Amino acid sequence: MENIEKLKFLTSLKVFCGVFLLVLFFFNFLDIMIFELSRSFPGIIFIFFRKFIDPLSDIFDPFVLIVLCSLILLLNSNIKHILRNEKKLNIIKKQTGFSFEKISLLFKYLSLVCKHFIISLAVAGILCNIFKYIIGVSRPKYFFLEGYDRFNFFNIDQKVNSFPSGHTQAAFTLAMLLIIYLNKYTLYILIFSILMGLSRIFMSMHFPSDLIAGAYLGSVIPILTYNYFYRNDIEKIKSKQDVLIIDIVKLLYWRFYI
Image 1 (cartoon, helix red, strand yellow):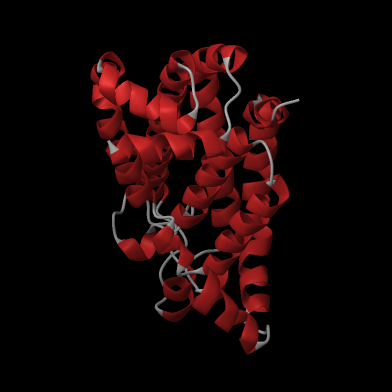
Image 2 (tube, rainbow, N blue to C red; image 1 turned 180 degrees about the horizontal axis):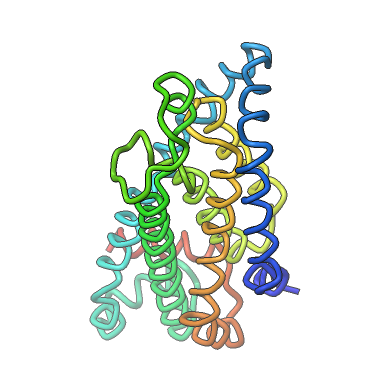
């Protein structure tokens, strides 16, 4: 069974209600206690998250990924012209060993994947920031050190846009996208995403409820967009052609080369 089938339960009403209740419970009873408890952890844990985990958020920044996917789409925008150019097409066929049909399907698949990445990252990010503005939860360091109220509704101040966690949302949006398409390494991807989320507590930027909400929002958007917009086209391609990462990399290399 493909990972997308295993992930469908996350979009159910039952899971939504469960997450909603969990967020309320953490917000009212556990957030402050867990955050204060985290302050007693050994300094090496703070160093680990600050020096190794948190900087990775810059590498996997949604904007950077959206730009990268957009560049690939731009590169693929004249594929029909290349496929009609017998000289260029023969170079790709000779160097990759792919048939015309396989080349055409892989290019189409790559474009669909890039569009899915762009839409998922953009929609999840926009929704996350809308919730931040509406709910206006204070970040821990401003709540504890500067006496901010826990809620500051309809406020764009960075100090009070803690809920949901944008970094956690982005980490889980990317995680779900990778899990959907790689169909492997799920455990490692999830561990990495969880560490990205936990780093926000140790950076004094978020409470646990912020992480839970960000992780849920980041997880469901890629699944919903895949099922509603891309699933049929991608499954049609997969029914005609096996799609391997190495084949796409090889095809992209020779697309750049020519």
